[in-house]
Structures are given as structure tokens and as C-alpha cells.
Length: 295
Image (cartoon, rainbow, N blue to C red; front, side):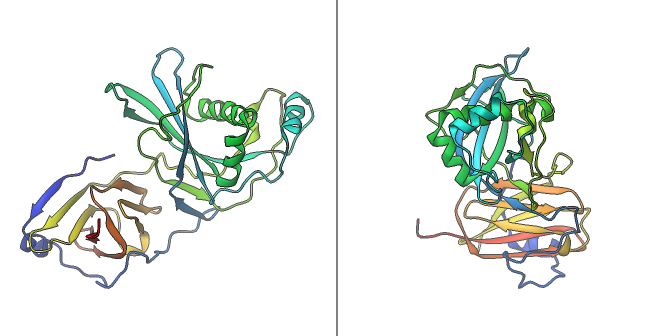
């Protein structure tokens, strides 16, 4: 992720270089059109759940798995008990039981000692997450198939020593997930020990997305306003963009041009009082936010 640059900018400089050519009344909650995909999809910000720590085989690099939750992912279509789960794992027969989840991209973040650690976010249904909290058997089962899936997708192989972090629910900042809006198809188990086949991944691949350059700044004569300028040289129209702003977070995506920006901002703003402007000449998107003053 690009490091933000904070500037105290003379407003005349910005106004000279950003001649707004699109409707200045565009609100932040406007959802722009995106190209047709095989499956419709949407950006989702999951909620922290719990964090599991392990180490990579061969390098001893720490590996953190953030298991997070969202209602955008469906629960397993069939509810089973612990006894039924035990029977499923012992059976050689094909099963239709599956666990829908979104496996994020592998990234690196420094730990408390400053050493680089590997981090991956895995999102599951928020109701099914309650089952994991209540049942150690289900939690161990889901974690085993998650680590198996991560080894298949990211080629990161972790040791069997896995520690549930009791003092933290998440390592680093949770990333945005692109969730495909489709029903999970039944999974056939080709082998008894093929745990990865119990997963139905419903996230879209975001590995090829580019993080655009941006700056964050305040204008001297607008104490209650905060701005973000985002450079999007490949974008030709605001219709190619999806923009979402929370109290302390900006998420911008262009599926057509493969841009994805997901950043936290250093103060709280009002999500309902945000305007965005795209300059089709300079290819800069300006996001104007109003700072919360009642904190």
C-alpha cells in the first residue's frame, strides 16, 4: 500500500490544477456502473473475528491468518452437528457439505519487533462464525481447510503449530474483499484427506489490481474539510469507478482499469457529507470530506 503524504496546501494551487469538468454535486454514495462479469460482485469490508499465528515451513517466517466475518458471504447451506462433522471426516463417500469463504491476497506487514510477517485475511459468514466460537472442533476443522487452501492458492506452507491469539482479533489492517454474488456449487471430495475441497471460494481475484498514487491534505481556509487527490491516468470517466468512504477509511475501485485503493485516514469524517469530483483532463479524482467535530 502506498504511504500517504500529508500536505498543507494553498487552495489556489489546487484550484488552478483541478478544473472540475463533471457534476460537482456527485455524492459519495453514488454507485457508478461497472462492466458485466461472469458473476456480479461487490466490495465488502469484513469485521474482525480472531487471529491465528503459525510459521512458514523452511523460512520460519511468521504467518498470521485473520479469520473475519461478513453477512455478504452465505453460511454453509447445510447445518451439521459435531457428530455429523466427525462422520463426514471419517467417511469415504462424496459429500455436498462445503464452507463458503473469501481468501484474500497474501501480504507482508511488520510485527511488533519490526520483522516482516506474512498475513492473509479469510472471510466467512458472520452467523457461521458463531459456530466456530462455540465449538473448538469446528474451529479446528475450518482452520485446517483454510491453511490447506492458502497453501494451494498462495504456495505458503505453514507448520502444524497454530496459536489462537488471545490478545488481538486481527493482525494489521483488514483488506477489502471482492465477493462474487453466486450460490456455492456442491463440492465432490475426490480423496478422503482432500480438505481443501470442502471450501467453496467466492472471492474474485484482485492480485492484478494496481494501487493508484494519492495525497491527503487540508486547505488552510477550510478547517473542517479534508481532501484526497487520487491519480487515475487510465480512467476516462467516473462511470468506471466505485467509491466508498467510511468514518476513517477510503475504498476506491475500477474493475475496468484494475485499480484498487483501500486506505485508512488519520481522522474521522462524516460518511454522509462527502463529495467526489473526477477531472477528465488531469485524470484526478478529488474526494472532499467533512471532519467530525464532536469527538
